[in-house]
Image 1 (cartoon, helix red, strand yellow):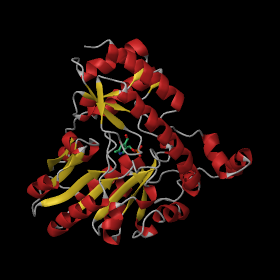
Image 2 (spheres, protein in one colour; image 1 turned 90 degrees about the horizontal axis):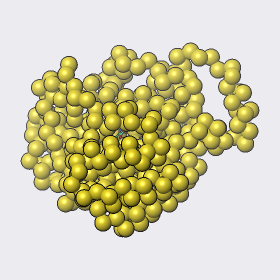
Image 3 (cartoon, rainbow, N blue to C red; image 1 turned 135 degrees about the horizontal axis):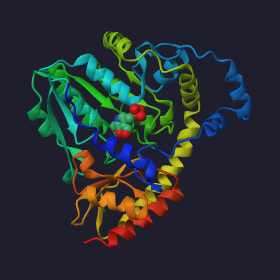
Image 4 (spheres, rainbow, N blue to C red; image 1 turned 135 degrees about the vertical axis):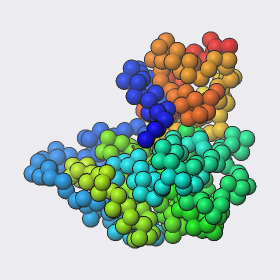
Amino acid sequence: MEIKGFGVEEWLNKNEKAAQFDISQSTISSLTLGELLSFDSQDPTATFTKYLNTKLNYGWIEGSPEFKKLVAQLYDQVDSQNILQTNGATGGNFLALFSLLNPGDHIISLYPSYQQLYDLPKSLGVKVDEWDLKESLNWQPDLAQLRQLISPKTKMICLNNAQNPTGSLLNKALLEQVVLLARKVGAYVLADEVYQPVDKIDEFPDIADLYEKGISVNSLSKTYSVPGLRIGWIATQSKELADIFRKYRDYTMISGGVVNDTLACMTLRNRKAILQRNGKLVQRNHKILEQWVKNQPKVEIIMPEQVSTACVKLNIQMHDEEFCEELLQKTGVLIVPGSRFDMPGHARIGYCTDTETLKIGLKKLGDFLNQCE
Ligand SMILES: Cc1ncc(COP(=O)(O)O)c(C=O)c1O
């Protein structure tokens, strides 16, 4: 099985530990274990001690009943039996693609977006058509193009909502149109929803709520600030679909592990408080980014929703990859070259790091840009 290297992952794996000012990441500033425990109890040490008797067996295979119940509460139409815990959203995407697609199938993927959603299916022998996100449409796709691409042979439409790296959001009205088109041909709609905007999360249009063949993938890695737990999930209205995922899941993952499940439940139980903390951070940093761009003649931006990634256009002669490499070497600032997302001439800024790092990182990035032609 041939597969293309994962552009953004390869860039981060190589460079993130060398960065002094990391403004490349897509998580809202990660919580420490102590911070998470403090959300859950006034005496985190006692909570920690309580868990010392936890047996490190496999735990609940599909995720604990508490986990499944807490996740099901995030949806209107999904029963907890149709929630399966996965190894992050990456694990959820993989499970959906691996379970449902066969060589020769046709799918349509939002593009550019998360590379897993088009290059993994290609590696499985699937024909992938790209549904373009257009900068001229404020990083929205054009429904007319989807109408042209879709056919009775289309098995799945893959979306990333909100979208990495632009931070743009597909709204409910657009998703309803996508569902109408998909329903006509019986196609699944898979949506990777890890970047739900922190200020609109309660009214977010989850695809699993909107469509009987919708598959929502999500995780605790971005909006919930605990990527290190490696806990995500796959959610669907359909018991039949969930059973297909169960079957394939047994070959790829046994469980998420008792410790991670326990901490995942803690995160979900304290969801409101964590979202409050994150809402403040995103709002503050969003303003700083917006202000910074206003004073930068060599940078343009379509501001992201209140999600943790942003995509800037670089008006310089240097290639974006070379620019980002030099930036890191000379200033210690890490961002992601747009070419890693098939978006040359652009760069991803992960602006939801701690505010001090963002301020220093942007200042150094601005000074460096000023020296470029
Ligand atoms: C769209 C998207 N989905 C999934 C992931 C990975 O999520 P997880 O850590 O839950 O596997 C990323 C991380 O960059 C992402 O951008």
